[in-house]
Each structure stands twice: as C-alpha cells, then as structure tokens.
Length: 333
Image (tube, rainbow, N blue to C red; front, side, top):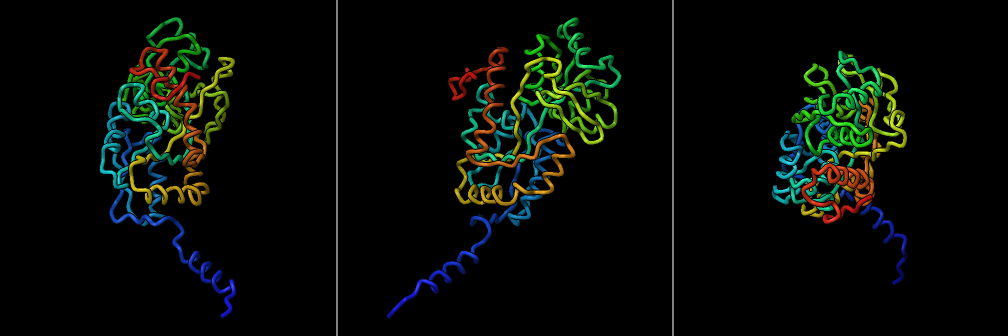
C-alpha cells in the first residue's frame, strides 16, 4: 500500500491549528499578585493595568494585594515564601528586587525570579511649588549651602526615589534630609503638600501633582529629557551635571522560578505574542512619563542588570550595603 505525505501533513497541521494559542496552564482559581508598595504608586498603577490585560488571556481573576513595608521587602518576601503552585506573584522595580540581598533584607537575587517586564520608569527631581527653587542649580546651591537640611521624600531605602537622590548626592557632592514613606504616591503627596521640600520619586507618581502645579519638575534623573503630556519637556540632570548617567529601571511582574514550568511557559508566550503589542499598556506609558518595554526571559535579565549593578555599588559606597555586591554576583562596574 502506497502512502503519500500530504494527508499526514494535513493531519499534523489540523492538530497544530487546534492547539490553544498559549501553553497549557489554565488557572483554576484567582491569582494573588502582591504589590509591595502603597496604592497609587508607580508599581501599583502599572501592575493594575497589566493584570487587567493578563486576565483576558488567562481567563482567571488576578487579585491585587498591596503589602507595603520595609522598602518593598515585606510583600516580596511573602511572595517568595508562598506555595510554589504559581498562584502568588509580586511586582515592582527590578532594581529593587536585585538589591534586597545586598541591603540585608531578603536572601534572594534576580536569578531566582522569572521577569515579565512592562515599562521602564524614570525619576524626576520635583520641588514643592512654593519653594524658592526655580531651577536645578538653585536646588543644588541650597543643598550645598545647607548640608543635610533640604528635606527629600522617597518611598524608603531601596526605592527608586532613594536611588535617584543618592545618584544626585554623589554626582553633585551634596547631602540631604531623608524622609521616608510607604510608597511613591505618598512621597509625591508629601512634596506637593509642603510636608517636604523635594521628592525624587518616579515621573508616574508625580504626574498628577505636577499637572496640578503643586510640584515643579526641575530635572529628570537621566542623560535624556522627558516629554510629559500636559507639562512639556523636563530637562535631563546631565544638562546641569555634565557626564551624568543613570541606568534605566525596568518594572514588571515577578514570578518565582520554583513554580511549575507550565505557569512560566504560559506567561512567556503571552509576553512574546500579546504584551509586546498591548495598547492599554502603551497608553499608560505615554500618559505617565514612562517607556513601553515588555520583555521576558534572558532579554529581561540582561536589560535590568545595569540598574541593579549601579545601585548596589552606590549603596556600598555610601556604607549602606550589608553585603558586598561582588560576593553575591554583582561585580563592580
């Protein structure tokens, strides 16, 4: 009996077409996504947008649980220690996740997690609108003339805002008075209300206060300007401190590598085929002064490392690291 390849190929093609669009994980109960910061901040904002889009592909509810405390380490630790069944995730800035061990907070490294990045955020140096600081040189001059007295609101040690003010302090040779809050949104509100003079939290967290003219943006902590809808162009810090650079801080959803393979295979495919073109996430980024940047896998691990490395060694130089970065896989740049 003679067989031809065409019917066999047709059967194979039909089988492939009948295969679900994504890997086989179909969650049978709601997923808990821990946001280790207060509601309203940059992590909370973008995580809620991303979760709503993921629900469409997973066919299951994703419950956002805010667990702020200890610079994000409380919620992150709870996600790490949860059952390894794929139903508990966390979120935040990859720089934070990669430095918990250096700061003596959690015994974990970036390699323990599957990274599903959504956007990159940049920090803005914003001052209360009633302060006399009209320009970045005004603020730097005041910080030099009154060492340790200019109050700066951040979401705490290991937050993006703290990384930003430390980068400014080192580059400009200044000191400041650090005032910490449970998240970037409360820190921005503190600066906008006059509780502090300055905040260095992310653009996404300051946008509303800036548009309401409660906060005056002086510079973006970068070597590139930032276009903000309804605000205009915020100049880069490199315009005032020549040669200044600060690595991009990527944000996303983080899933422990110890979960079943089918969980991450499903998320990998969603990120590769759907999140890379997601309109809701792109719109969020454009409206909040962020960069649309969906990535996963090895590409994500490579992208986040420069910010982790830079912050780890900044903390080490400032005497705030509990563990030398080079002993936990973070060589000196």
